Length: 315
Image 1 (cartoon, rainbow, N blue to C red):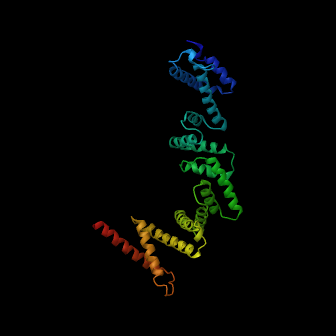
Image 2: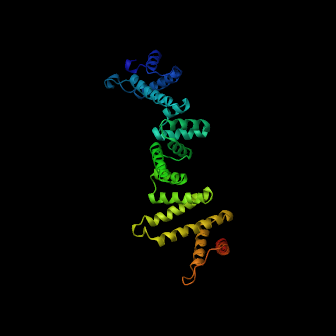
Image 3: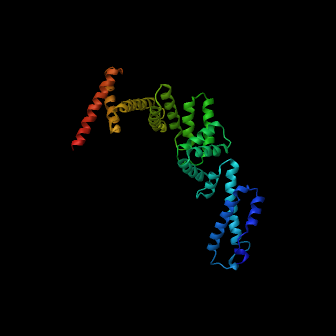
């Protein structure tokens, strides 16, 4: 067999590994990788004659080059502090960079959650970000979402979070606003209103689930008005939108106990009856909200809702 198709010897490869500063404990694995790649490349090029190879090309050199890429990738991860399982998985992954990190972390979390958590922290520390960067970076991985450009977004989150704290905003507001802005998917007005509503709900002692629903409804309703130039400062429209959000949340709170199958229908009917109750005649003195009126609105809504549901069932 010509020298173009002759594999490096173990002695030659070991000398190359030593020269590159690769720890001896990896020699056997890298030697096996070289042998496997050499056999694959030899088979791929078996139809070619020696003269078909360009100058400086050979199965031997291609196998060595492929092996060096493999070892460099592994040693890069080891140098960061990662363990062998993570490093070899990254090198063998069909994806690259961020996609590889997400895929390997996800796979590792399924097989060994504690090791996955350790490796994620090492990955995070490799970017040398501050505590806010780290908190955001890790949370996005743990949420299990496909979150690309994560280091860049975590840096942006940290910057905005600290800026909002310096402006006097609460930690809850700063976190929600920075989190949404760093996603680069939402209108800035929505981010502001969402963060405001979320913070307001928690400051009033509402549970986390309520705060999330309220913030979404509030942000969605107000951005729809404020983002339209001609009505962005229409106080009457803004106040009415806020009132509708508050009505929706009352319906939502009722449904936490009722657990109705069609909440969307119930909420729609609740709003209609609520508005008709308080705005039934503009010439009359506006009603003052009371427990009795709230109870009456709920009872009438439930009656109408159940009637509609029963009619649907009988048809």
